[in-house]
Every structure is written in C-alpha cells, then in structure tokens.
Amino acid sequence: MDKFTTLSAIAAPLDLMNIDTDMIIPKQFLKTIKRTGLGIHAFDELRYNEDGSEKPDFILNQEPYNAAQILITKDNFGCGSSREHAPWALLDFGLRCIIAPSYADIFYNNCFKNGILPIQTSAENVEQLMDAVKMNKSAQVNVDLENQTVKAGNISFEFEIDSFRKHCLLNGLDDIGLTLEKSKELTAFEENYKAAHPWV
View 1 (cartoon, rainbow, N blue to C red):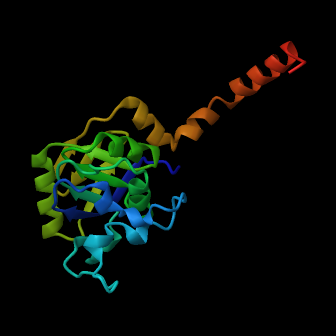
View 2 (view 1 turned 180 degrees about the horizontal axis):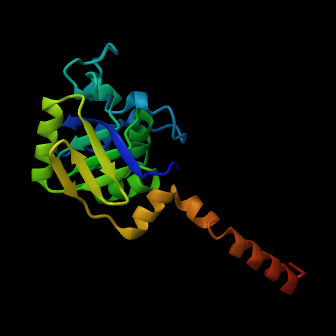
C-alpha cells in the first residue's frame, strides 16, 4: 500500500448526499478480485450514457476535475453494501482523499485499508471548500496528514483521525504490512517452536 503523507491536488466537488457503494461501483463489476481496472467503472451510471459515451454534466467528466485526486462530497458517503470494490474503484480512478461530513462505517474503514484518507469534517467546512473549488477549478487543495490540516487559498481547517489509522497511512501499512512488521518475532517463534516440538 502506498504511503499517504501530504497531497496537493485538484479537488472535485461532488455535491450529492447518500452516495452508496452501488453508485460508486455497480454490482455488475464485482466479479473481479483484482484491485486494478475498476477506475473506469467508478460512478458508472453517473458518468456514462447507455451508449457508453460520457455525460458532459457529470463533474468527474469535466476538466480539470477528471484528474482530481481529492473528492469533496456530502453526508453519508459510501452507504449501502459493504463491498470493498468501492474504495478499489476510487483509488484506481486516482482518488487518494475524500472530504465529507460523514461516512458509512464499513466504507470508512475500508478506505484506510486501501490507502485512501477519508477526512470527516463539518458541513460548513465542506461547503466552503466546495465553493472554493467551484470558483477556481484549478485550485490546489493541500492535505497534510502528519499535521492533520486541509488548506486551500484562505480556507484552512484541522481534522481528527485515529492515531493507529494515521500511523498505518503514513507508513503505507495494510493488514499484511502490519503483520510483516512482526516478521522477526514470528520467525523467532517458529524456530523456538520447532526446537521445542521436533516431532511436528
């Protein structure tokens, strides 16, 4: 998993509430167990017409938002089913950070396991940030995980994050990475166990 330390990037304002995981990645694309290749289908029904052409009025089809690495959105993002394909699709699209007032719990947890920083902040902060990136589409939003700050022009606010999750993101540690941090202890245990139980 890639580390997340700081990010300075275009932010796309997705001005919708209750975006569920089926909107993020529809069920027909859940057949794969690979984490790559899903970005093209992220927000599929919002992005594409029935003939496969892009809908020009959808925010992530518009320049420069189609290259956004940060998504600003509304309450209850990631609600619905618990599919881990949702953060896979967002990450493969290029999004590394989401800023919203609230998230569905399972989606929120899955983001951290896949290297996405989901920032939870007040609705007022979200509205101000959305207005700023709508007025200046090329504005850079700066996210600093170490100092837990978001800045864009004259907008600046701090955010809270669990210290363990922060450690994992800063060091690029998913569940496997956390286990491998204990590789020396695991090897020592295995060697001692074999010596004490040679018949096993």
